[in-house]
Each structure stands twice: as structure tokens, then as C-alpha cells.
Amino acid sequence: MKAASRIVAEILEGLRSLVAPGISTFDLDRYAASEADKRHAKCAFRGYHKYPYSLCCSPNDQVVHGMASKSQLKSGDIISLDFGVIYDDFYGDAAVTLPVGIISDKAKRLLAVTEESLYCAIQMAVPGNRLGDISSAVQVYVETRGYSVVRDFVGHGIGRSLHEDPQIPNYGSANKGIKLKSGMVLAIEPMINEKSHEVKVLDDNWTVITCDGGLSAHFEHTIAITDNGPEILTQIS
Ligand code: MF3
Ligand code: CO
Image 1 (cartoon, rainbow, N blue to C red):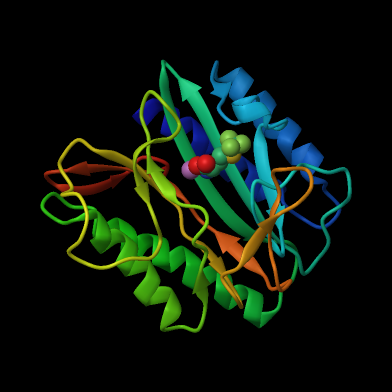
Image 2: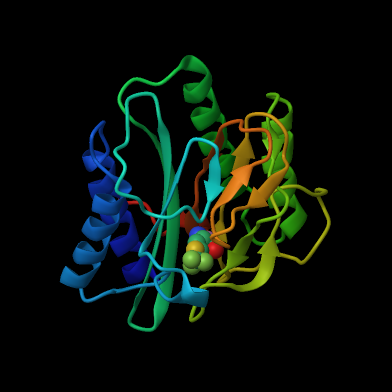
């Protein structure tokens, strides 16, 4: 899982340096697929329940599972890039939301709060804590800063399958849910909206957008729970 996750981290780093006004998400998708190929890794999302791309590209009011498109990104956009691979029979999965060119202060703050909520959640991923400690950490951090937590999509266990138990909501009560144990590997992925938490799926059956047109951000890491604390596998350290 370390090897698969490292590949995901490397490719997301490459994507980070490509994101700029003028590039299309179609180009980003092709880059991700060809970099995975070079590393003999298989893209995890393409073909998953017939999802047609390797990279989920969700700009602005798109929450998750956006479709690559030939239209160009422009300065002021934010773009969530979610990528996963299978390598040596194991999955790795991560996402970042990046600024395109110069973005507004309100967009910057949404990105910062969403990313920080992921790190708050990861800190709770220690043996003896409960699943609700992770969920609650995200919810409290985000809601005290005026944003809302998407409820219709969740993080997940990950291993030989992309989605394993447990489901990991980004809202819930501390001290509730299953006990966390050393050896568990989780994909924690807060999806945070600027305004209402309500989302809907477009007619393409994939793209999730905010109902009110507000911005949405998404960060994800695959992490392992160890006796020495959480280890972030999708981070190049
Ligand atoms: N990170 C997302 C997830 O955990 C990506 C899945 S996209 C899909 O579910 F196309 F594969 F569904
Ligand atoms: Co995921």
C-alpha cells in the first residue's frame, strides 16, 4: 500500500506543477494516465462502475467525480484532482484542491480550512480512538469556521479494494463508532462546501455539484494507523 500510495503522491505532485490557466482537465487526465503507465500502475478509477476517466477533475462548484473536459482552466478557478492506482494488488487514493492562477481570498480560505480539516482528522487516527473521533474532528473544525460538510459522500477503508469498510463520514460524534486499531488503512476525504452542504448529481450520473452554486473543496490522504501514530502514505516525505 505504501508503494501504490507513493505513486499516487508523485503523480499528484506532477499535476500540481501543471495546473495553470490554459490547461484543460482533459490534458491533466492524460498526464495522470501516462505517468501511471510509466510506473506499471493501473489507474483505479477508470472503469470503476464505468467511470470514464483516470483522474476525477472537479472545478469550482463541482464537489467530486467531475469529468475531464477540453475546456481550459482559467485564473480564479479552483480544481479538485482525485487520483487512485492499483499497484501490486493494492490501492492508493488521494486528492488535492488547487488554485488556478490568482484566486480570491474567500477561495483561498476554503482550501486552507478544508486541507487543515484533513490533518485534524488524521491526528485522530490512532489506536484506541474511535471512528467518530475522525468524523467529529472534521465537522467541528469546518463548522466553527462557517463552512459545511458534505454528507452524501464519505471516506473509506482501502486495501485490496478501493472501497472497504468502514465508511468514514466527515460528520459525527466523538467517542462513537468502531475502535481504531494498528494496521488499519483509511482514505480520509473531507468534502467541504462554502455554503449549504446540499449536493446533487448531474445527468452524466457522476459529476456532483453544490445545489446553491457555492464553491466546494476536497482533500484526501490514504493513511495507515500504527502504534507510532498515523502514517500518511500518499505524502512524499
Ligand atoms: N476518491 C474517490 C473515492 O474514494 C474516487 C472514486 S471515483 C470513481 O471514491 F470513479 F472511482 F468512483
Ligand atoms: Co477515496
